[in-house]
Image (cartoon, rainbow, N blue to C red):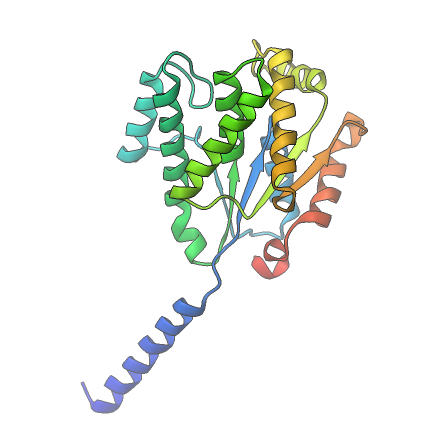
Amino acid sequence: MPQKAQEATRERRSKKTASIRTRRPGLLVGVEGFEAHDVSSALLRSITSPPRIFVGSAREPNARPDFATLMALAEAAGGEPYIRGGRSASETLTVIAMQTHRYESARLFLAAGRTVVEQRGVYTAAVEDAVTRHPGDLEQAHQAARRFLTTVAEWRPLPGVVLLSTDEPQAIVKRLRLNDQEKTLDPAQLLEKAQLFELLVGDDPARFRTFDRREIGEARVDEAVRDWLTRVLPEEMGPQAV
């Protein structure tokens, strides 16, 4: 190869390497709570098309052997990935492993500067796990949830921004049952989870953006969610990110 061509090739490679090194990492956004899917759907509709966004969910089908192994461990523990019973300590560590795996599956998207939306991620998992392990004891559940988050943070980053929708537990139960979801949901346990979410928001208020739908009629909730998102979305998720 002629010397000039070699120099041109080296220059292109050098510029590409420099671009990769200076690229700003993408933003990790958590969409948490009982009705995270509703907020995620509104979020996707709020971003200019086509979105540079990746939505992750531990419940989505995934044929990768490593994910299948984690799912097998969760099933062997005796229940769903979020709600288990019987062997609480080992089950909690299994859920933490799944949350770490989820981040690692999206790490390349973040390294490329893309926004990653994590639906029902570490905070929902922490709340579900803590209330399942300490039913009726909000103080113990709060301590357990904080330990869960601290352990997760040793293995992967927590979301930079967390979007959380809140409502009266009875209203949430009614909507979930209308959608044929969580038919056996216990309103009393749901109240404990809602209270625990509030405590976690109080622990780290700068990280959370909370949408309160208690004063909003069902007829205009979609519009209200979209209006709320336009006010609270970080700049990284605006038009310059698409």
